[in-house]
Image 1 (cartoon, rainbow, N blue to C red):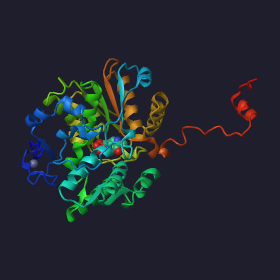
Image 2: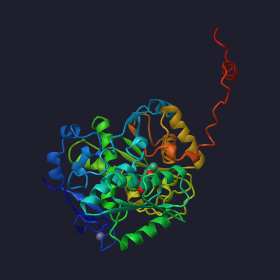
Image 3: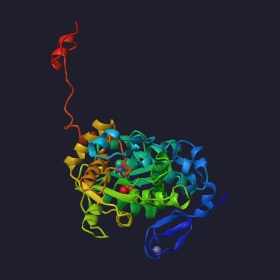
Image 4: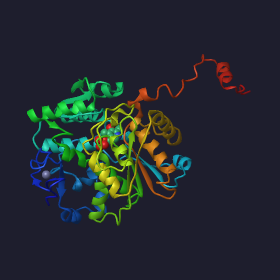
Length: 413
Ligand SMILES: *Cc1c(COP(=O)(O)O)cnc(C)c1O
Ligand SMILES: [Zn+2]
């Protein structure tokens, strides 16, 4: 077998490292990322091979940072790309698609992708305990995958998460640690713990591998569009990692010849109450100022985003845009997506659809653009956000006359 994964390389100074559990450069403290041998990969990764692969993200294993095939998370990825005709009609877009990661296996968010890859690599590197610093969905996914892989597990979450996201950890019986503080506090503590013990913190010391899992959202999009890259993508941002990796994935498919060109504008979406990256973009800056998050979009509430700088770069490089929406707009957008396409997204999905709407109004996204909106998490996990905005059921007694009276319709003769 060819060695597809060559090294870890510093994104700032280019120094290379062995493919171990390291994530920062010892020379310049820059973040490390996986470097591949694209010439070798191009030889083996054909459309035919992908098409005959499993219906999961592992069909793209040639571009994922694992060495063997002893996979954790066998069924993650390969979610539907829905042609959103109703929502497209409402917005004035002829080619709008929803990449629906509300139905990712097993924990109903895009995090099942990054965790499948990170935990497979963690096991290859000999770890027995996995952990994470999470805004909610990551902890759910790490907990579930650890249960099925039989690994010890610690998940760290902020103290104010939605009930379903807390329960969505406890049910798998990991060690759930709720921190009295926000995500940035959680992350700081976890970095300290990661320095002390040999645990695989999927988004800290395993981060270079973890982040690569997000590329599969780009790979699937290209395959599902019939081997073409979209004109526009709209991506929700927390740390900014997902956005940068969708861009990386598209360029990799171009490098190995699976698409002819990548005209894609990479657009980023945040909530107004936590918008360090989008604010920097709108102010024409290439660096962000950390903020204290205050938004119902808790899965995106990272005030000091690790990949914010690289997200700004990817958007600038592609002539993309960024924007933000209020909590009210998030709720309205969740309802709009549900009521036009029958897809119930969590708050991050409301952020994406809200910003999509803004970018159409501003004329940045045009009627003919092939546009993909990434819906990254399931609405049943953030019920608190919409419970007061959807009305109540009609409550009647079990009598036909009550039913007909309620709806003002005649009894059938
Ligand atoms: C984690 C997450 C994201 C984006 O995360 P990044 O840190 O930017 O990679 C988007 N949507 C949901 C629902 C998430 O849980
Ligand atoms: Zn460096």
